[in-house]
Length: 291
Length: 349
Image 1: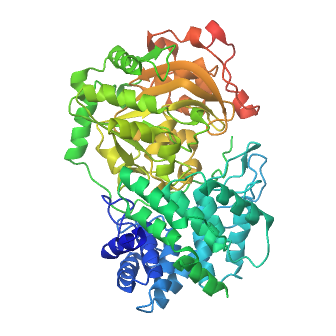
Image 2: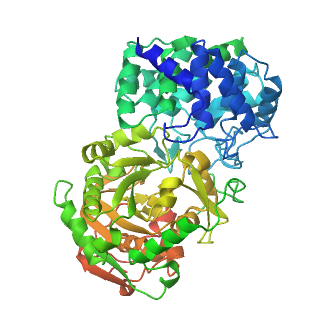
Image 3: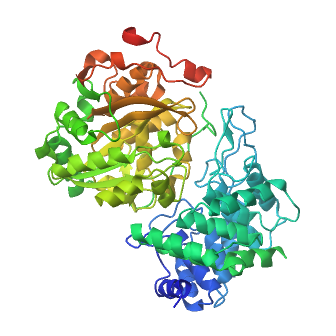
């Protein structure tokens, strides 16, 4: 049996999972696991995960990071994607409540352009934690969910896209969300670049910054990044239809290396999603929503 | 000065979820604090602190002996650590293979582990990198994974563990408390194992600022923006005040100057500094860097709350600090240039 089938089987038996095997279940790893299983056509465990996520949903529509921690609520977008992916039942009420929360959540902005930082501090995108500034990964996740919901043209989605483009560094790639600080240009990181490019994959126009960041990821993949970063990089490239050489082999090697240090269902899930290429559920949901 | 995305009003992380009350665990931690000969928070205004400095250190040198000597010099005895849970907290904020000056060298991790283990402690390494969510990447790029593998050291990913609410014991910043990861709360001793670097907002980062990494990104973000909004110097103080007992072993061998803590240049200093009082060791290292501790915002707040800044209240063991002064380059911004000591060399204050 190939590693993809093996890992898919394993994930199917325990879709509700934590970041590591010895940690309690958490929203993000469970959501990624469910999306990987959805892409593999395993509907029962997807429904299990969808139910679990629904139990976590708060009255205001948000979904926190775990059963014990209702805040922060940045994984709300991941819950939306799982509910969309669950073909077994209609999660419309939950989806609408979550979408409403996302559309009415605003990161802290500043109506001045400081010489201390290079990015546009005025764009109302999304933060990790309520009442803090906006950053690349939570903004990417919310843009992905809103796009999947058919809201590509919504003002909030457009703001999120504007923010993500603003954070792409000269030369390609982005990091957690700073560009220059005190006049010094910062370095890109693979994982947030992958996130941002997934979110930017349904742009209706060409943007040179996107092309440069795709180039950055193609270069980084050759340098043997670790499992999570490699997986997000491959997903970012796949979302734009960029082929990846030796995809399965690279992922298998990275996953094996990763699991030697510590067992993690989260890492298995991301590797599976990346292995699914353009057939991955996240990309499919975005393309359906944008069409 | 106003921080990036600085706060007009601070935000609060919800404290409505699971909060422990005082329990046996808390009593055990308190007992351990006494057992390692700690100077309690309330006593810090009356008692001198000891700082040990070793010079001429190398990563391929006898770091184990240096650390042993340092712990003995500050009167931490083997018997105090037997059976205790020691959490080593290196700096892996945003590692890059090409920038070894950014993160704690793995040789420091290995050497500290060997010493504590030889004294019967149970040792783990823990970190919650502030700028990267891929912890595996951080471990590989910093090469700390090599130390973990070679020495069979347990690693705790502080960004993603279950968390416990701890009341803010410092009371300087507006946050009522902090969510700490399980491994932090359960530790008998947290060893801050930082890389000595300049810092473009607060002047320097050493043992106290390094403990930002005990705060989980899953609750506070990447970066930990909640803390920035509540005030960087203030949250440095309050995190240090709210943790279980901590001490410092500082990697000052290959340091960072210029645009720290990420984009600065390497600076060789060859120093290892050890203390059971992180305030005292940071003040001493500030002087070595050519900075005035009283002007560094978080040290000014720590003064006489958490430890002494004045040389007259710091007992120096090992090397004297004065001959080691080697001013670090700092960015040409007023908020940083104002941190410079009035003079350098033996007359520095």
